[in-house]
Amino acid sequence: MATTDYFDRVTQAAEWLRGRGFGGGETAVVLGSGLGAFTDSMTEPFAHDYSEIPHWPRSTVIGHQGRLVGGIVGGRRVIALAGRVHFYEGYDLRMVTFAVRVLGRLGVRTLILTNAAGGINTNFSQGALMVIDDHINLFGNNPLMGPNDDRFGPRFPDMTEVYSRRLKSVADAVARDLKLPLEHGVYIAVHGPSYETPAEIYAFRTLGADAVGMSTVPEAIVARHMGIDVLGISCITNMAAGVLPHPLHHDDVMETTRRIRGEFIALLEGIIGRL
Image 1: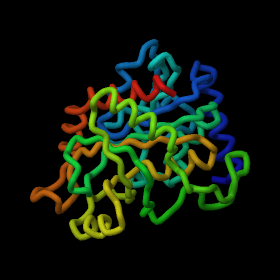
Image 2: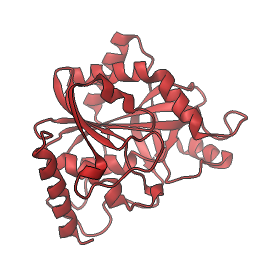
Image 3: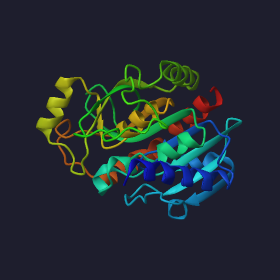
């Protein structure tokens, strides 16, 4: 797909959504595996399935509903993506980040990226929430590869502060008020879909990673390319391979997100209310 064609498709999707009431909100949330229950807390909700939106890729993963939901949270208009697509589903990174491009064209200036992640830091407990301080990209690729379209952003965007210090401070303040433990750490992204080996987890820990997952980083890079402020929050749904003596299963991820959904929703609502 040519760069111009891609920009046109992003613009067409944005205009379609704007015509259905999705314009005007400056905050968006991408909801990771099993975390879609957040949309139930939105007031005045309206939604469209991804299959209805022009050019929008479809999610094929359990725990990703595949709906775009608009509504009010903390007195603010918010767009929530109940589900994302992943590199391991067979999409290239331009399609993985298509939704973020559309959000930018809709005028979103703050993006909260959430995910389910494996805990590498042995001080973390299953079900912990972690603010992403920084990331390590092990996708072996970058969503900005290829010709740059200056209408999206510069050829060489700075990545010194991918995850906004201001937004991290807001998250910490909300967590304190809620008396909710909130970890901080480095998220390492791999493309999956197989879970990591114990040797890989040992190597990632040596590199300084605290949590591992299969998403978020491409979206964060593209958001910063467009000048969007980013906050990343991981739900530590399981301890990574080799940390505990049992195999990993996606059902465990879903069960943990069900268990902590109340804390997760309260944290997100509090953060959005203070933006």
